[in-house]
Length: 466
Image (cartoon, rainbow, N blue to C red):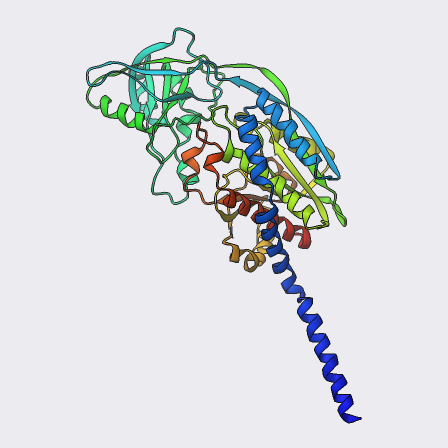
């Protein structure tokens, strides 16, 4: 009898051990679920085929263009096919800038090289030169301050050539971009203030090549507007060498113009939370892109990341506690109308975004997330999310302070937590705002890893809150 008793005890303990092996401890549940997120993203993710259609069938999607309208309808249909609780279009008025005919930028009658065309793209929002173009002497500067020091006597009637390279010593190339981009965004206004007739701007990339990079500029309505054109880094180096030897005249012809604002849309889909429906977790990217190339990394990748977060969680039969909302913003590139409209309407409705995650840094290998938020809440929330580092570090992800995304930044006043997805940045500015930002620049696996990374963070925020 005693032996039977001990045998019963052993069998009972064995069954408990077996159950424990089949049902991991609560602390391990997250690790197992995160692994299932990655497995699903890498085997059943939809981000790459979605991006392929967006880039090869629709192409560049500048706000106000027919391609932007086609992208709105395509992504709406894809979200609708997931059987979400709600899918809708949010109207917003956007600027309508058109590039016009191919830009002509030409060194004229140089003693060193004769006449030579330069690789060029008009900057977004620039005015055109008129059909006859302009010819003027070029002066080279490194900064807006240098223009100011030269003054009217040296600038009036000239074409100002901004030639400050991005700093190659910056390990994160976005920091190098931030240190150089003011000459593109504000250089035309500064040059016009002192009488310049046009500006040339070195393209924003660390790479030396023949590919020009467009991008937006801003004008001061109190100062005369002048045309602005970016030239490739190789051509910038060439022009600079010639200017050291002789005076140079350049011919510039562009026909770009700004038409009246038009109606467009943010594309939104959501799953209502089962326990805390009034706490919104937003994932998003911007649907518009420049008209050259097809906006694969900037920011088609971010849009399909956001869509795939929802698709992956749906495929895993995950029922969120909080409302998960995918937002594809319109007009980040040359106006930010979509982000501002979204925040305005959200504030009017009294919504609360517990967290917002933006992907607008390309589809490269994931490195982690940058974080931002209202000073009243940031420290407390950051302490919470760094508790999850042991769960995400095995996937090569980190968390750091500073930065989120342009489209979600207007939500800061709601005192939720803002995050920007941060992939490896080394190649991003090889493609940014160019004609080569196409699907062949995107690695399928890297893109899928990005979707898995963002899904993981959404899962942890949804499960534990902030």
